[in-house]
Image (tube, rainbow, N blue to C red; front, top):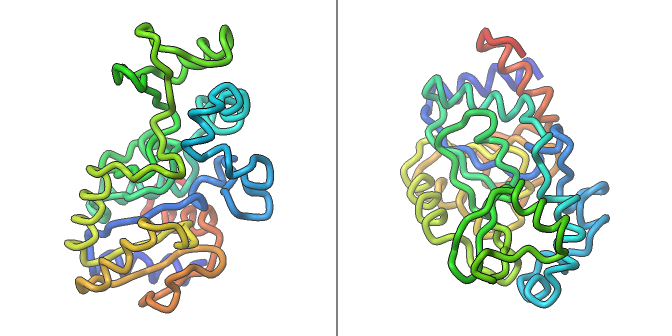
Length: 248
């Protein structure tokens, strides 16, 4: 781990600033399960619940399952990897975080330049008038009625990307721009099998960037990486923070 940390800091110093893509592996140390792993969410909830058609037909079923298992993240705290990325941003090593995660933990840790490809599980809006609602208000509404409705009568939905929906145009545009213009692209905690997120490292490489992948296990783009660290992110991040002279 010491060798990985030293190489990481050397690469950052050489190619700074970096663009970082984060996946579910970044948040597992905070107690949030990934989707496809042995203990993943898909072993507890059918992937069907994340289909837009299913939500529109069965919002009561969605909310009865999802509010407990996905959306109520108020007590979930950022972990060492989130803290590392916040620190690297503050010190000018990272200028953008593209994330596949919907937990909002990068922002909770203090990162400022976060591009959310799949939305945010803490935010909700009315499908009729587009009024936004906080997680606390929606939890209260669901406790009183199984389906939360807006004051205008419209159905309130989570501000996440369901299967069957396109990613937010603005997020994709900003992620594409960041990938094209970076000198270093770092992947952390993603198996790189879900597109279009998995396409951004390729875009970066095609435009001359150095690609570093930090992930436990194989990814879909290992063959393209200039360097790959196969390691536990929490342990890795702790060592890097220590080397930066910060409390871990």
